[in-house]
Length: 445
Image (tube, rainbow, N blue to C red; front, side, top):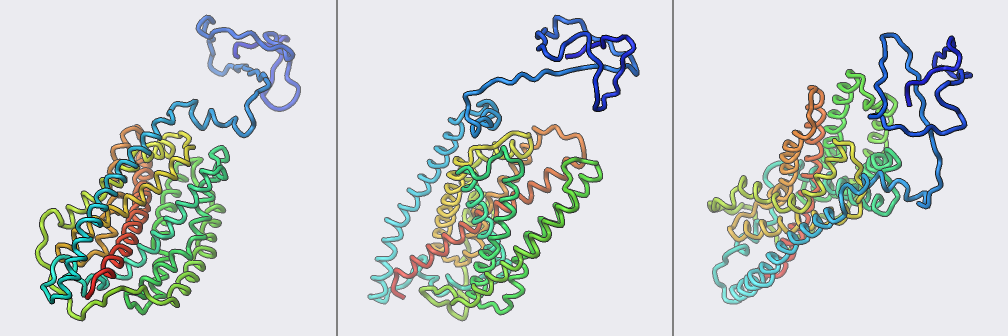
């Protein structure tokens, strides 16, 4: 309340701790009666005049348990009903069901028929056709950027493990949004601890490609993606500090982050790589020939740009509702608390990426194009492109008026989209690797 005066006409108070002169307009032992501001004449304040105001606190017993008292804030007073998230789950399940039916048709009808026909041709010495025709080239390592491919897959495996564990811990209640910063701390710690996963996956895949410089591959795995993220974060943090923003990270916290990266994550990456490179390479059911087979011209619908545009639509459609709420939490100051829904959507997203990559890889092999390594990664990985395009549309909701806002938003969204590309691409590649090994082990060559 405002419009207060002291009892003594000459009383004054500078706002510091100490005895406050008694007020004429209210009493310390009595709660003031509420008065509608619209029924009270406005207070005129002159230049240099001191304004005296007070506030009252009234404590009341509550029947709500202590652990549940944050729920009204986390749910934004039920501003977003749970049925919206259930709609997201049902939408994702329908997409997965559609892809599962397609794969079932491929596996039960086409693929089974192909295997029977190919085995019959083997007994009759008939001409090979379809995906069996490229059996001597299908497991040939990619001709371009082999090391980068191993680094991307290893980093993607690390991000997948980190994301699944973080969302799982949050969904069971270990990481509450009421405890500010706990989610980010857990995310950074789990990412550092999952370094051994990325080192193991990248090193073993690099050994399968008959690579020799595994130390270089491991170094790129340990420093490439985290280095890009750190340099971007450092640049943006300097910009925020120049604006005297309270969101700028202190220098000591930056040192802690660097120490977590260099002294925890990097050694674990090298440890995982050491273990992975000592393991036997991945075994394939068929060997590739010395001379690569020429690849015929591909139809327009299997061109690289077309499959990249189409491949990310279904995975993005499976998660776009939750993407909206997560971005509202990141950029609009809202709470995100439905981590159980998020965990289900994350699993559905990985399944959708795996099934999408399998379908496109099968069509590609049927057209005698055995260059499936990078494509199986990039087709589902184009989901990150759709997330970035959606973020460009979402930016209009922020009403930005500073140049630094544009840098902050789009730089962070590029990093987020890159992380989603690694997650979805790795899920698609691992599924295609298992699919290819399975179908080629089922035929006689």
